[in-house]
Length: 472
Image (cartoon, rainbow, N blue to C red; front, side, top):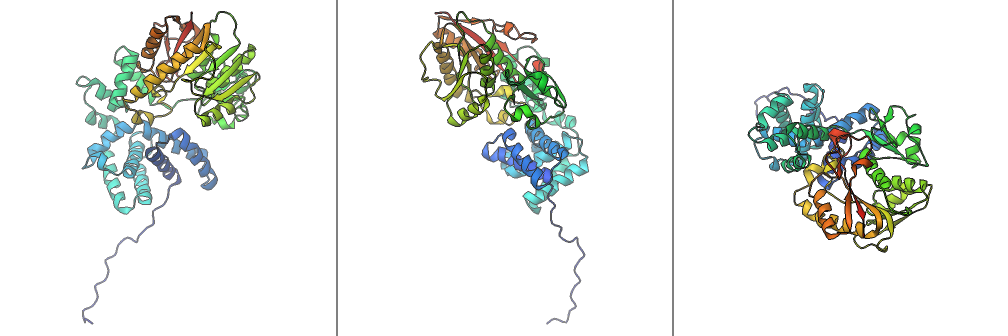
């Protein structure tokens, strides 16, 4: 052994186990599910929150913060990606997705909330230690400290091109939408800069929870007795829950007598129900009925007139959701699992037909912010033939003198007017009616004859509606 005395160890900080923050950990779990499994936050988050209430004692404020972190991060993902890209030394595609999720959560806390800077950074680094390990937590710390050196407006001035140089890219970065979506929405909206900015801003706002009172089973007056409930803007059956009300706490919703349904969706069903038909009015069809919101309202309205609704949905599990939504309807109805392009019913069987077709969902980006990053322009090529086939089937399924409502939760012209115009060329014995009178009291409906609703103008999803009458 050596006679040399041992050197004393240098004093250092003892190792500290990372502390798991339940709120931020839950937000990270939700973002990973959205990224890894193509899940939707509105489906992933509720069960995570229920589990957290039971296991971690989540209170209302914890759930509210977790919800804001998830949805805020998803809505502003494009803007945050541009900012993070300025603060890392490699392309974003080379940053591990879990690391990028932690960075995005941290960026949102720094730039999109009132959380103090030191708390946002330290909480994000601690989350990184829990889910990524100490090594990558140091990387997260370094990047977030760079981001913290400026506010959101300052960063946007650095990462977004000037509007005059590239209007679409400027709006895409500032309002966190893919460039092609900005271009498509602008084409559909028409007009100048003010309108598209209002629309993109509305897409990034948290939508209100809107309930529908199903006629014959509930009333708007009953729902208005709920705390924080206020009347809908346009639909007589709509009630809005202000201040983030919980629909699951409403008796009528739990019992199926009312439901959660955007007011634009309600207006589309009401327009189809109130469109003028010639002759009898006994048999109605919802040809793409899943998950059942419009079908439930239509079935209730049909029951008031002694009419019957057939609700058809191709996917069996979605047909099951339709059956659940219609259970307890006061009048006759039937739910079937059937392909709307190869219908089991005879041509000319119905007096009214609603065809709310599958689409890109660009009209519901407030509710499903992750959809804007998943969709691609080429998706339109996949939906287009199906949309035309379904609408053509709808025209074939209605009798002479009856009406068809073509609806889609997308304002993209390729999914709206282009589809209607193409099908009408195939059906010279069908005519387009003016749908605007079927939306009484609703402003800014344009030149018609079809109707396009907008989040910024109407407070609804961007639902489209055309009314067609079979004339021969």
